[in-house]
Image 1: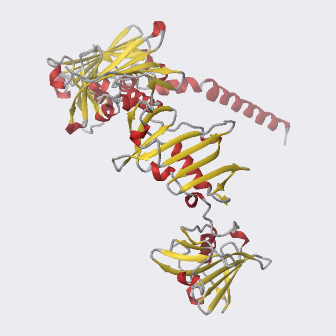
Image 2 (image 1 turned 180 degrees about the horizontal axis):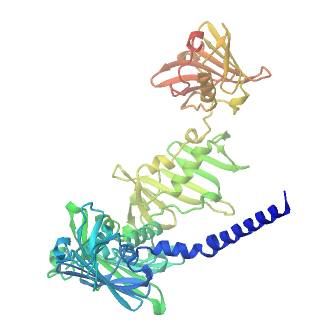
Length: 587
């Protein structure tokens, strides 16, 4: 290639580079700005520049003012404004575009719905006042006829401008029922129309204590739930700003809910009053303390406000640290059971040394920890005998790590069949609880012992399955994870999933009843001559697991582990339908 040609190409390349730099890098921001403001009615304005907006539609005027970082309604009512709808309106105004000019000097404004206009908008921004008159929609419905205040030309503007300008006043109003942050609430008071007030104060970060009508611990979950519901509650409907008669709304004798927010110079009191329920709207009349306006809120908010000491009182019956439990004693109708945590596993130590069912022990501890009072029947324990708690039906004792003495809970049946009495001896009140606590906590050794039928094995370790039923034995070998082949009495590919399901069923099988621990009267249960015998073997040919299956009657199937004396009852569906012939398995 000649040197002259190279020089020309280099100059072209240099020129293209310079063009790209100037056009794409230096001039791009200006082009983007120009494109963004093209056809804009107010080219130098942004939504944040607007600080005063007036909407006129017919006889109604809506006046919105920005105060620092918040918007407020100044007319037709003085109230806080909802940020979302106001920001949508100011954005629509600041970025309003002219689609095209229709008539520079219209003879009849009425032809465009501009005499009178459907809505007039005026707003202040950057020290200047701007305005728009909005008329009828264009034939397509996408645009609206408009005029800029003080100018004659009629043009097409987005129809969304008219939508925003004609929104009901209620849509611009802040619908927050009571504005506060839950962490700032230091106290609350509930004053029903009749009866004593209920008051509580915050103790620490998350704990609450009732101060009236009695100094007792408060239910933290109940208090925080009430505060969260109140903080997120929204006004459903604005009813009136100047009620002539509060009795019409049940607000002459309201239920009052008051909050103490902040401390020291920042301390403030905020309150809400509840009146009559409006059943067909699932709502209730309400009024902010110190304000005249009446509005509707969801009835569920009223239902969340407890009006008695019991409603806010801590309902924990048996406080203990479940994670630190290391010994348990259950003294119930079926005797005493002792359990101990050894090497991370629970063992039954009395009435016999047995492996415990981890799930059953865990459930016992959860049920004890989560037991909740339904009512308080005595604030002291001077009359335990009155409630049968001097000779309880159930006594649950739990020793925690590092503790010498156990924490004890006693329970006895109440006269009402759906209730029981409970107490922690030596401290606290006597309470009523659900009657189910008697069976939930009064468990026997049988309830708490491990009910696994077979010693633990892994399903993947089973290499051969033998099912003997009647005079026929089916032998199946594993060919893959869910792949099984029939080897006897004939060969063929089988439905592998059914065999794998059987392996997992036996691995997870648990007995419902221990029928005869020493194996007495096996013939009574059909286990002298089993209906079927299942044997699992490993790769080394040794038995991994086995089960003999006897009669099925009365909602039970009777089984035993070959070589062991005990007879058990299981759920008849526990093993599924055992195949009895090759044809039931072959593909």
